[in-house]
Image 1 (spheres, rainbow, N blue to C red):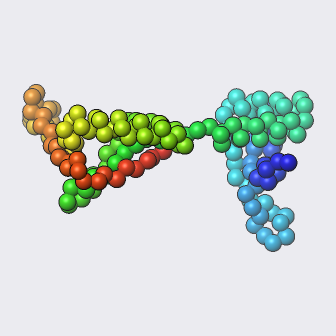
Image 2: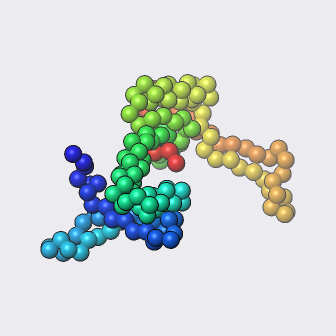
Image 3: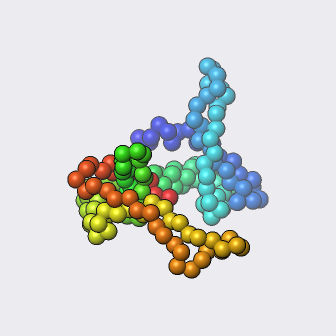
Length: 169
């Protein structure tokens, strides 16, 4: 038995141009009689459109729809990576920092290892977080050598830190 969402797919393709294959998902209907569908286009790469168009023209539209369902399910099962960041309250405002640690969404041990690495990196830096960088400029708006200073924020390691998980781009 198939999923209910996969029953509502619409495809179109020109007979002489396989790369013109287009696929849409019917997301709903605009009236009560259910005879005017609302379409949402499915983004496909050029190679996917060409292959699905070839299946639609040479074999049958049913095989193209089956392959399209296979592609959509594979996209849904692809695990997304997350980045770890944290919010720190310094008394006046919150500072949001992101660390480059990546982990999978439902991997609890990976998440814990990323947290442990983040905490270890903060301990090595003595809980100093660079907040700003100041550079002196000459008359032509070019930085003067050795005039760079960084502003740091000290974090109390005993206070709680809010850990935020963000989807990696």
